[in-house]
Every structure is written in C-alpha cells, then in structure tokens.
Length: 339
Image (cartoon, rainbow, N blue to C red):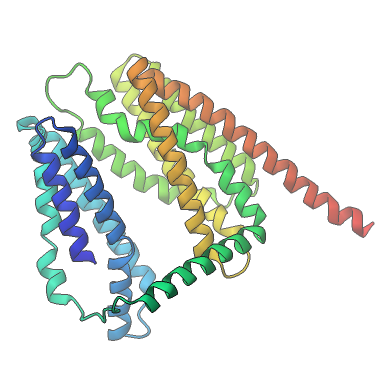
C-alpha cells in the first residue's frame, strides 16, 4: 500500500505540474492526491511496528516514533525552504516537480523490504462479510458516542477553531507574497516549522495547568487575536512575527485539545471515537475552506482571516461556556446527593 500511495501521489503532482490551465488536470490531481493520502494512512507505521517486533519483541516503539517525527520535520523544513526560496524563483512549477520526484525515492527501499501479503479472493461471501462488518462498526460507533457524551461535547466545541486556523494555514504564502516579484516565503516557512516544534514541546507544560477551560479559552483568544492583528497591522515584518506567534500557540493548542479529548474517553472504543472526531474535523475544515475562499474572493485575504477569526472565537467561546456549565452541574449533583 505504501508503494502504491507514493506512485499515486506522485502521479497527482505530475498532473498538476503539466497543467496548462485545464481545470480537469487540477481535479484529477486532487483526486489522485487524496487517494494517495488514504492509501498511505497508517501503512508505514504498521509495517514499522511489525518489523520491529519481529526483530525484538521488547522493542520500545515510542522512542523510535519520536526520533522519526523529528527527522521528518527536519526534512520538511529543508525541502520546504529549498522549494520556496530557490526553486520557486526559477519556476513556480519546479517545487511541484521536485515533490513528485521525491515521492518516488522511497519506492526502491520499500520494494526491497516488502512482505508477501495474502490477498483475500473476491467473492460474494467476502462482500457480504464486509457489509456486515460495516454495519457492526456503525452500531459500535453509536454505542461509543452514547457512553462518551463528554467526549462528544468537547469534540463539537473544538470544531469552530477550524474557522480560525484554516485560512492562515492554507493562504499564508499568498498573503505574505503580495506585492513581491520574487518568492521570499522560504524564511517564513523555516520559522513556521521551528515554532511548530517549540509549540508542541510547550504543550507538555501547559497541560499541567489545572483550570482546563481557562487554558483552552486563553489559547483560542491568542490564536484568533494574533491572526486578526497580523491581517490588519500593515507592517509586514510585524505581521510575520504575529503569524509566527499564531503558529506557536496553534501547535500548543492542538496538542492540548487532543490530549484533553483522549482523557474524556471511557472504555475501549478509543480508535472509533478518534475516528469520529477526525471525520467531524474534516467536514468542518471543508466548510471553513469554502467560507474563507468566498470571503477572500469577495473582499481580501486579510478580511477573510479577520471575519473567520472573530466568528470562530465567538462560537468556540460559546462551546466552552456550555461545557463549563455542564461540568459544574455534574460536580454539584453528586454533592447534593451526598448531603
């Protein structure tokens, strides 16, 4: 699956590279890229765990994943900087071509290390079994949500944050590149990667704060406030610094929120619940992209960021307020029963 994922995603980028303004090339590129991402999801991690456990049953996986994450972040920083700062100034299509080529590089290694997989033959019985398993999964999902209402409340409360972060995450190159003849966003990308790592590290200390809702509210205010000021400050250097602060606290906020979500889970349905949360986030991001895109076309990128940040902050604050009230009621109820 990993090899197929690399080929599919590389082909998708090649369609984008050879696009001459034909909308169908862009659509095919998007479809192939999405398919490649789906094929990749979890395959390399699963192979790594199986391979490590085969060599040493007592192998500590967590340390290895920490190392590989650091390496991949460093590689992303270097390749992103080279692509944005150098290749893009030669031709805007060259970073896309470089990405397509780099995606093919791991294939020889993966091919050498591949295992022979047992393929399940296609039959009516297997098809019926697949449908039956999906029906059970839907019922399992319903049962998991009904027994984890706190998780569902937090998951819904976190959704409006996509309005705050989606625009800046997808448009920051366009925003800071305005009025410039050459591409100069490579240095900004270095700051984005470094501060993202620092933000994730800081989250470990922030999670020690006992007043959870206050922490979440403060992080959301900082994230929304920095983007609003960055979009309207008028001074490019100051706007970049504010954007970096936004990246720093967004990274911290993401780690904090996901940790809190995991703490709300009761029982053994963790994978199912996280899958539901990811699906809701994907849907919310799709809506946020549409809203942000329309506002950007109608007004400007800066105005789009400002409006979505204000709306996202308001909706998130309302969600946190509801959770606080529910939490207080649950605390008061046992005390009343004891008295």
